[in-house]
Every structure is written in structure tokens, then in C-alpha cells.
Image 1 (spheres, rainbow, N blue to C red):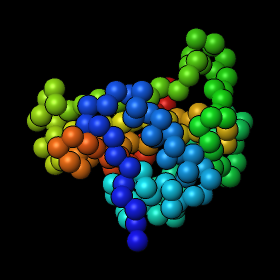
Image 2 (image 1 turned 90 degrees about the vertical axis):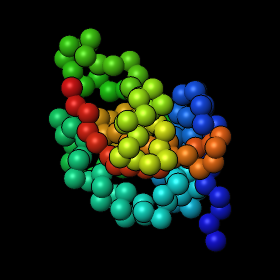
Image 3 (image 1 turned 120 degrees about the vertical axis):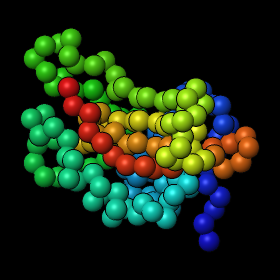
Image 4 (image 1 turned 90 degrees about the horizontal axis):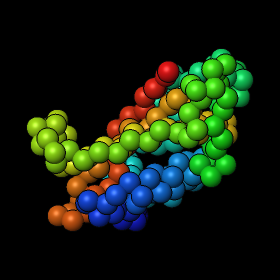
Length: 159
């Protein structure tokens, strides 16, 4: 029997939301799907096989040596490094770029996703480096005062 999904306050700041995403990524990196599932409202939709099959077709930039070849894996957040991927230093971000926003500023945006009040776009560490693959989550309302992560998709954000 599945435990209750991990929730957080509806208007939580990114300082609360991002560590929850970190814990989900770390559970996936450890192949601990039981724990990873506890972080997702829609865990039944995302098996480890489906996670892998969703990420493999959008492999990270193969010109960056740690991502060359066919073997790559999601790795823990705490040990992820920023790679020097470009010859122009200004193009190398000092840290991964995470996005978090609430839809209540424009309720019309929520029409396509009932009960979702916001979104999180969060890069994935691949083979020890922050990658250009991001996990896209909706913030799914589960009670009047709380939300949970609903994994929506994966996307590539390339420079």
C-alpha cells in the first residue's frame, strides 16, 4: 500500500520547493523508486522504466565529454558539478538554473491543468554534471492549503 504523497504549503517559497525536488532526484539517482514515488502526486504514471524511456531520447549534449557515448544516468544533486562546456567563460553558468512560478497571477493559465497552481522546471544532474535536461513539474493542489509535485514531462534547454 502506497504511503501518502509528500506535500508542502500551497504558497511555499522556492527555498522549500527546490529541496523537495532535490530529494526526488536523489531517490531516482539511487534507483529507490519507492521513495521517489512518495514525492509525486502521479507516481503511478512514472515507473523507473518510463522515467528512463522519457529521458533517453533527449540525451544531454553529446559534445560535452562526460555525456559522450550512450551510457548516462541521473546522479545525486549534492555532488553535481557545473561543467565548463563552452570556450567562452561567460557562457558557462555558475550554477544550474531552476524556475518556479505560481499561476495565480494569471488564472487563465491553469485552465489546461485543473487543480494545478504552479510549475517547477528543474535541471537534472547527469553523470555527475548539471545537464540541459530539465524535469517539468506542476504543483498539484491536494487540499485547500497544500500542493504536491506532479511530474509532467522532461525537456531540453540548450544554449
